[in-house]
Image 1 (cartoon, rainbow, N blue to C red):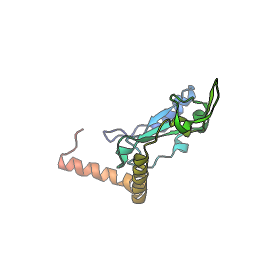
Image 2 (cartoon, one colour):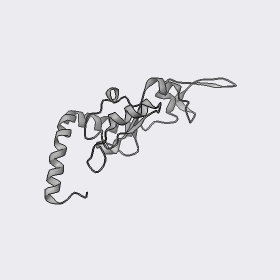
Image 3 (tube, helix red, strand yellow):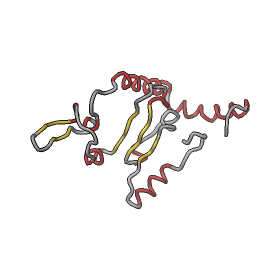
Image 4 (cartoon, one colour):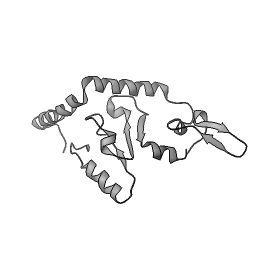
Length: 147
Protein backbone atom coordinates (compact mmCIF):
# COMPACT_ATOMS: atom_id res chain seq x y z
CA UNK A 1 0.00 0.00 0.00
CA UNK A 2 1.46 3.34 -0.97
CA UNK A 3 0.73 6.51 0.95
CA UNK A 4 -1.73 7.59 -1.75
CA UNK A 5 -4.02 4.63 -0.96
CA UNK A 6 -2.92 2.48 -3.86
CA UNK A 7 -1.65 -1.06 -3.59
CA UNK A 8 1.34 -2.24 -5.58
CA UNK A 9 1.48 -5.74 -7.14
CA UNK A 10 4.01 -6.82 -4.52
CA UNK A 11 3.56 -10.57 -5.02
CA UNK A 12 4.37 -10.16 -8.72
CA UNK A 13 7.32 -7.86 -7.97
CA UNK A 14 8.81 -10.38 -5.52
CA UNK A 15 8.33 -13.20 -8.06
CA UNK A 16 9.94 -11.21 -10.89
CA UNK A 17 12.88 -10.17 -8.72
CA UNK A 18 13.52 -13.73 -7.55
CA UNK A 19 13.30 -14.95 -11.16
CA UNK A 20 16.45 -12.94 -11.97
CA UNK A 21 18.24 -13.88 -8.74
CA UNK A 22 17.62 -10.67 -6.81
CA UNK A 23 17.04 -10.51 -3.08
CA UNK A 24 13.93 -8.56 -2.09
CA UNK A 25 13.45 -6.18 0.82
CA UNK A 26 9.87 -4.97 1.22
CA UNK A 27 9.31 -1.66 2.99
CA UNK A 28 5.96 -2.49 4.60
CA UNK A 29 5.72 0.62 6.80
CA UNK A 30 2.57 1.78 5.00
CA UNK A 31 1.01 -1.70 4.83
CA UNK A 32 1.36 -3.34 8.24
CA UNK A 33 -0.94 -0.90 10.07
CA UNK A 34 -3.69 -1.39 7.47
CA UNK A 35 -3.71 -5.07 6.54
CA UNK A 36 -2.45 -8.49 7.55
CA UNK A 37 0.91 -9.30 5.96
CA UNK A 38 1.84 -12.95 5.49
CA UNK A 39 5.63 -12.98 5.09
CA UNK A 40 5.71 -16.65 4.14
CA UNK A 41 3.17 -16.21 1.34
CA UNK A 42 4.85 -12.99 0.23
CA UNK A 43 8.21 -14.81 0.02
CA UNK A 44 10.21 -11.59 0.39
CA UNK A 45 13.72 -12.11 1.69
CA UNK A 46 13.41 -9.19 4.11
CA UNK A 47 10.53 -7.03 5.32
CA UNK A 48 10.77 -3.89 7.44
CA UNK A 49 8.20 -1.78 9.25
CA UNK A 50 8.26 1.06 11.76
CA UNK A 51 6.44 1.21 15.06
CA UNK A 52 5.11 4.75 14.79
CA UNK A 53 3.02 3.81 11.73
CA UNK A 54 1.37 1.13 13.90
CA UNK A 55 0.28 3.43 16.77
CA UNK A 56 3.53 2.65 18.59
CA UNK A 57 6.50 4.71 19.76
CA UNK A 58 9.02 6.38 17.48
CA UNK A 59 12.61 5.20 17.18
CA UNK A 60 11.93 1.49 16.74
CA UNK A 61 10.74 -0.89 14.07
CA UNK A 62 11.35 -4.43 13.02
CA UNK A 63 13.16 -6.44 10.40
CA UNK A 64 11.93 -9.82 9.22
CA UNK A 65 14.49 -11.86 7.35
CA UNK A 66 14.65 -15.37 6.03
CA UNK A 67 16.66 -17.41 8.50
CA UNK A 68 19.34 -18.59 6.05
CA UNK A 69 20.01 -15.03 4.92
CA UNK A 70 20.21 -13.69 8.48
CA UNK A 71 22.67 -16.42 9.45
CA UNK A 72 24.82 -15.58 6.42
CA UNK A 73 24.94 -11.84 7.17
CA UNK A 74 27.86 -10.55 9.22
CA UNK A 75 27.09 -8.00 11.93
CA UNK A 76 28.07 -4.43 11.13
CA UNK A 77 28.65 -3.33 14.74
CA UNK A 78 30.23 -5.02 17.73
CA UNK A 79 29.48 -5.31 21.42
CA UNK A 80 26.91 -6.42 23.91
CA UNK A 81 24.98 -9.64 23.65
CA UNK A 82 25.75 -10.04 19.95
CA UNK A 83 29.14 -11.59 20.67
CA UNK A 84 29.11 -15.23 21.67
CA UNK A 85 32.84 -15.84 22.26
CA UNK A 86 35.96 -13.66 22.11
CA UNK A 87 39.42 -14.96 21.22
CA UNK A 88 42.72 -13.16 20.66
CA UNK A 89 42.37 -13.31 16.89
CA UNK A 90 38.61 -13.40 16.30
CA UNK A 91 35.13 -13.40 17.78
CA UNK A 92 32.12 -15.58 17.17
CA UNK A 93 28.69 -14.05 17.03
CA UNK A 94 25.36 -15.04 18.52
CA UNK A 95 22.56 -16.36 16.35
CA UNK A 96 20.10 -13.90 14.80
CA UNK A 97 18.50 -11.72 15.93
CA UNK A 98 20.99 -11.17 18.77
CA UNK A 99 23.94 -10.91 16.37
CA UNK A 100 22.52 -7.63 15.06
CA UNK A 101 21.74 -6.08 18.46
CA UNK A 102 24.86 -4.27 19.65
CA UNK A 103 24.58 -2.24 22.82
CA UNK A 104 21.66 -1.62 25.10
CA UNK A 105 18.31 -2.41 23.48
CA UNK A 106 15.49 0.13 23.37
CA UNK A 107 13.51 -1.73 26.02
CA UNK A 108 10.74 0.83 26.54
CA UNK A 109 10.23 1.24 22.81
CA UNK A 110 10.15 -2.55 22.31
CA UNK A 111 7.45 -2.84 24.98
CA UNK A 112 5.53 -0.04 23.26
CA UNK A 113 5.84 -1.77 19.87
CA UNK A 114 4.53 -4.98 21.42
CA UNK A 115 1.57 -3.08 22.89
CA UNK A 116 0.83 -1.49 19.50
CA UNK A 117 0.87 -4.90 17.82
CA UNK A 118 -1.44 -6.25 20.54
CA UNK A 119 -3.77 -3.26 20.04
CA UNK A 120 -4.03 -3.72 16.27
CA UNK A 121 -4.43 -7.48 16.70
CA UNK A 122 -7.24 -6.97 19.21
CA UNK A 123 -9.12 -4.79 16.71
CA UNK A 124 -8.43 -7.32 13.97
CA UNK A 125 -6.40 -6.67 10.85
CA UNK A 126 -9.29 -7.76 8.61
CA UNK A 127 -11.58 -5.19 10.27
CA UNK A 128 -8.95 -2.50 9.79
CA UNK A 129 -8.46 -3.51 6.15
CA UNK A 130 -12.22 -3.51 5.51
CA UNK A 131 -12.56 -0.04 7.07
CA UNK A 132 -10.00 1.61 4.77
CA UNK A 133 -12.23 2.02 1.66
CA UNK A 134 -14.99 3.54 3.82
CA UNK A 135 -12.51 5.99 5.33
CA UNK A 136 -11.23 7.04 1.90
CA UNK A 137 -14.81 7.44 0.61
CA UNK A 138 -15.74 9.62 3.59
CA UNK A 139 -12.60 11.73 3.21
CA UNK A 140 -13.37 12.24 -0.49
CA UNK A 141 -16.93 13.34 0.36
CA UNK A 142 -15.59 15.83 2.89
CA UNK A 143 -12.91 17.02 0.49
CA UNK A 144 -10.23 16.39 3.08
CA UNK A 145 -8.01 14.01 1.14
CA UNK A 146 -5.08 15.32 -0.86
CA UNK A 147 -4.64 13.23 -4.00
